[in-house]
Image 1 (cartoon, rainbow, N blue to C red):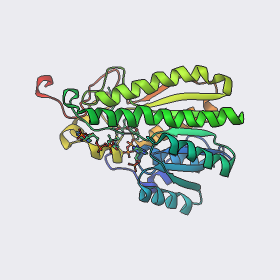
Image 2: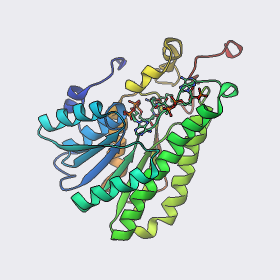
Image 3: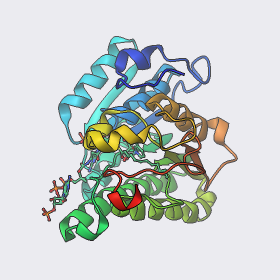
Image 4: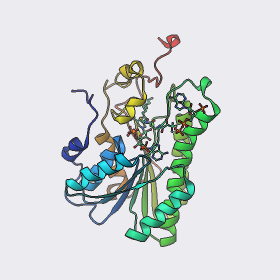
Length: 282
Ligand SMILES: CCCCCCCCC/C=C/C(=O)SCCNC(=O)CCNC(=O)[C@H](O)C(C)(C)COP(=O)(O)OP(=O)(O)OC[C@H]1O[C@@H](n2cnc3c(N)ncnc32)[C@H](O)[C@@H]1OP(=O)(O)O
Ligand SMILES: NC(=O)C1=CN([C@@H]2O[C@H](COP(=O)(O)OP(=O)(O)OC[C@H]3O[C@@H](n4cnc5c(N)ncnc54)[C@H](OP(=O)(O)O)[C@@H]3O)[C@@H](O)[C@H]2O)C=CC1
């Protein structure tokens, strides 16, 4: 099988095969955080091509402008909001604006996040705090404020949290592993608490996915990533996008509190070092 070693772009996402047909998300509103690149961009394209209006969010306006322009040039419906997921009050205001404008939000794809690779023993306090704040607190703020809107308006909702494959830890990524494990168990907990509000909460755990995010890793680490699973290759953002559509939409209507792992079998065989394999483990 050909390795997907180039970062896919808007044109690729405009032409990738869809998991469903028709306008099955017509009339629905989907928010994709971190939708200006990588997995988030692919997910925005997938939902938009299935008829949804997409709101993408992130911190860098140009990426959001470019992605919305690509979507709308293809005749799809999309807009953006600049929003840092660590800004608790800003997120509340953003949802208030969205509900004021659209009167609804059907699906939240809680995808924004990231980290830097480093041995845990070397983390500075600020480094630890930045990653936990981004991936645990940020994900939570996005979930809680959406859920409050749905509860108060008696509307159903669906959340898909993008996490990571954590059952065996993440070498060189202990901070993000802790944060993502937190999101997974938070999701399982509120999947129960929020069932009475008709809010489903699930997680998608990507293995190594070749996206813009890979630029954060050294060539040495990257050169081993595609050998970290028994398929011996990267996955694509489109793989993850389709899982988000399946879990987040009506096809996932009886699924809540679940984690769908897409890692080419990496949790069963192979190991991954986010900062390169230390000599001791060679
Ligand atoms: C089993 C199968 C599994 C399979 C699972 C496989 C998964 C592996 C692949 C994963 C891929 C991805 O996630 S791809 C997605 C990658 N994308 C990203 O990571 C982009 C998003 N990242 C970011 O925005 C940033 O890096 C983020 C982590 C949030 C920090 O942003 P901030 O602006 O808040 O932080 P800053 O002010 O810059 O820095 C805060 C502190 O962090 C430190 N810091 C920041 N970058 C640093 C770095 N590279 N090395 C050391 N330290 C760093 C700074 O020095 C500061 O500490 P002091 O100096 O002490 O003050
Ligand atoms: N690629 C992979 O192999 C894997 C990825 N993941 C996770 O999947 C998600 C998407 O990653 P991917 O698409 O690969 O990489 P990207 O770096 O392309 O995507 C991350 C997105 O999140 C946004 N973002 C990051 N921090 C914040 C913040 N504080 N507030 C708002 N937006 C933010 C970024 O935009 P901006 O900087 O403009 O704000 C960017 O668009 C991330 O959470 C990542 O950690 C998990 C496992 C594996």
